[in-house]
Image 1: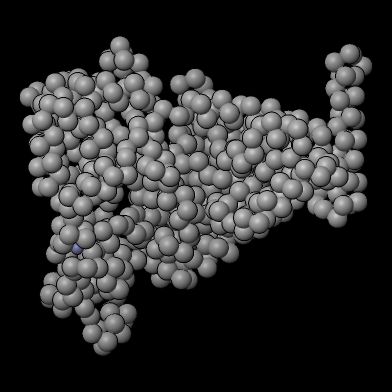
Image 2: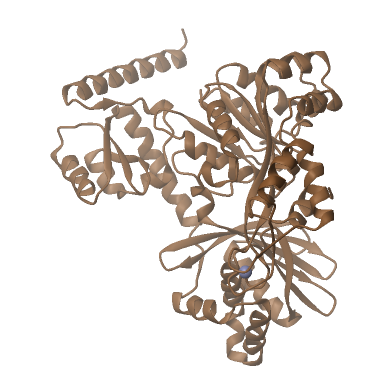
Length: 550
Ligand SMILES: [Zn+2]
């Protein structure tokens, strides 16, 4: 035995002794013992107590929601720890206390320092005063009003330095997900993406754009002198109590740097599975499947179809201190409490496949892989799902059935697909028709024909007897005269049951899977959309825009 492995052995022995000690203390004080080496620590929870308190009393928070707090401590006999816990209990938190080993504590303390450093990098912030925002929230009810106000700012020289704030405030006000700054020959085109669609808001003089660009680059940590290659950065908008994260990406274009700001809505991570738009029967099928300890769940659809939100909602649903959840993303958009998130960096060689390979060794219960786009990732993901992990990932295919031939393309054996794949989802987002201004109408002959085509003779008949009404958008202050407000998912999904397993092994071509899908009378994306039209949630136009003409 060489020195290295001897000292490793000793360390290992010391560690085990400390874990035993922690177990003993937990029992003595009627508390639960927790093995922190398998428990993901939430960086947000770590921030609860100041570092000197953590260091002095050997206590920290490992899990934190608006209602619950979990603490880990080394020595329950330290009186101060009881005081700290009591304080939070009195504030109305539900509290759970675990005993952890000294070894685990020392490791967390290291993490704590790293966590602090990270936080510093992220503090570049632009403050928008509540008054300012409120003022413009009342004034800007339509794009036209936004244009007038930006115009009035431009007219007054002293106001030009607040134009960026105004642009951001308007974006937040309209619920925009992205703000596009596109330099043209004569001026800068400013566009907002709202509920998935781009709207031209305004054109700015190029000299004003240059000052805004400089401000944006400084804020988001982009190199000012670099203009000929793509750069990414972040900053946050401070709005009173909450911070809104903004991801910045700049790309060179013919007339200078083109910049897109993605506004990350913090409410996105709090979305419940129940609110995504799954029909009741689909939701119960989904819940049943994700509760299983293994299997591969794929969500298909183009970028912007809401796949990430669905997975985040699934992770939130599954999250528990007894489960280890790891994500591999590109990039991490939203930070989730209680979940270990990692970000790949393909340009530096840290790929999905590489990240996944090393993370599987961390013995997670649930793994979210942002996307399966190469053979290696496909192979590791399917293997992991066969060996006791629940794996969630996305694929770029047109519909749910397409996932199977796509996996075959990625050189996964049909037999392996049949045994690893448990559920396939396809999804899109449709805009919700504004409830304030939409009007209920009797559908035209042509519309009835379309509804009938999608539902099929029998189902159509049943619905027609009850009388069919559908909604038409109009436009009001509430929806900023767009006729629509917010979005909802439409879904198709199927469980890989025995029938599908046999079919995949027999013939994994797209047509063979689609035939079985139809034979089983499963609900397509378009059908889910049309059902939501009949329920008055969206419009037929919207379903056709997203799913193609019926
Ligand atoms: Zn409206």
